[in-house]
Length: 419
Ligand SMILES: *Cc1c(COP(=O)(O)O)cnc(C)c1O
Image 1 (cartoon, rainbow, N blue to C red):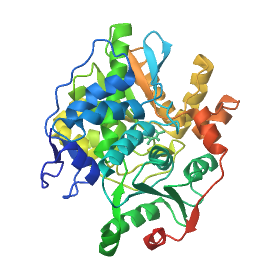
Image 2 (cartoon, rainbow, N blue to C red):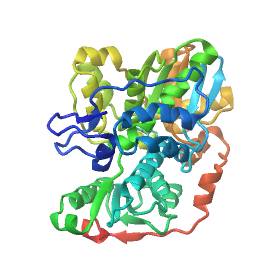
Image 3 (tube, rainbow, N blue to C red):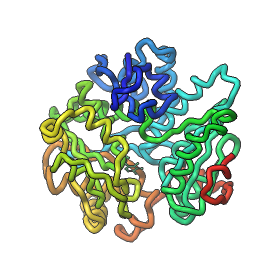
């Protein structure tokens, strides 16, 4: 099984090499040369076993092929339930992992793969990750105590919530947290500069864990396939799946699941006030812009990095129009949906999930559908609690992190301070 770069100017590689490399040498993103055939059990059954059925064919001929079932067993050791609002409509809860957001799936799979690739190497691998919130904690938690790997997490001072900061700084051992006196762009720039520094490359083996890494994308195929099969089994219908989206890594997983044959009627992206994607679908012109701040802040992205994979999958504008749909949801409508959903179903949603729910109510009303819930509402309590008029109970895993002491270094935005 070979992976090629979206820009077509790098040699094709196996899954392990694509994951270890991150970005292809020509600056493109790795995508499958052709999609493999997968064997799907009639009844989805155990999630980790199902995940191995989907992921293993992508590792055909790769040194890690035989390890995939074990990697999946360890990485996906939590529930992936559908919560039914009524006979026809469900919410796919992707927040039962250790940091209560869907990024746990990708980060945990990636960490297990990288640990295995490090075996027998005499130099530690150092992962640099710049974060505006959820990514950093998922990566820190997933790589904690992994052998032969160190992680440096960078986050902007004063721009993450206090609960988020706690989750970014409650680590020790192989995880170091850096509070940078600058904004998220400064953090990202430090990481980029570190990768380009020739002297640093002599002494440090550096890698990244951001959402363009193939190792984060492959596990994001699985739950779309799994949940659409469960849905079909229960209702006899194929669902429309609505995915709250920012960098479109999660939705890229959904489109790849359809390529593999998942019984999905259609995929719809819900975005916030950042409208790069809906505009692109409408006009065919891709115009990246600076992000605007919203209450669904994990989707505040003006230049979604995984768009390159979707533009590779759908080669012209007609195909884009045929396959893609995206709807922008403003903050006041997100708030209103958090309120209404609680009133009608006694169900509490995070702001990102509520953007998806608004799209369902207004575009698909009673149709068979799944809204993807990307985070637990307790992670965004300052937005959610005023709308529903009560506190949201914190899941046990998060509670554990919030109780630990904070460890971090406060640094100026110069990459040299990381080494
Ligand atoms: C990261 C994130 C998103 C956006 O996912 P993408 O893969 O970047 O499109 C949505 N909701 C939450 C809670 C997130 O953490």
